[in-house]
Image (cartoon, rainbow, N blue to C red):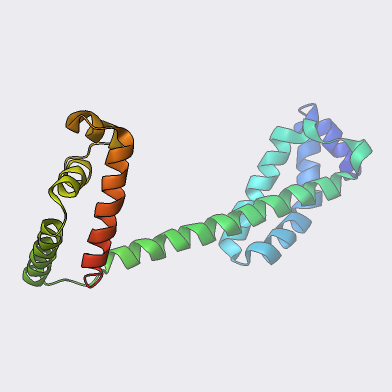
Length: 180
């Protein structure tokens, strides 16, 4: 019996037909999978998954769309490609994890000193702003208020606050230009 006829019988739950189909297509399925996956053990596993899938999904085969063997080999090829992609993704995840795990140690004292110097520089630059600019910038960036909330707290029009912020941030950027 040919693969087309056997697959139709397998769709009806015929175990004998499945055994015969298995014997007929297992070689070509393994060969195709082996060419894609390359690893013999992985290839055997994928080939078994494909053959198990044939048993479960034989009813999806439509003989009007092509031969059973071409449908089976398409399923095998897709499953093999999925395995290769999965293995590559797993390898990439492992490489990223290894890179994160091997971050160079840092000198905590030097980091703290540098952060302290940066804070002092920011304070000096804030002191160069007008009182109104400093007040607006502090409320927005240190206290976390939105421009609208800053305007409400200071009882000023939103446009005035936006102008203060724009001017103040511009002066800060000019002052801090040496830090970055």
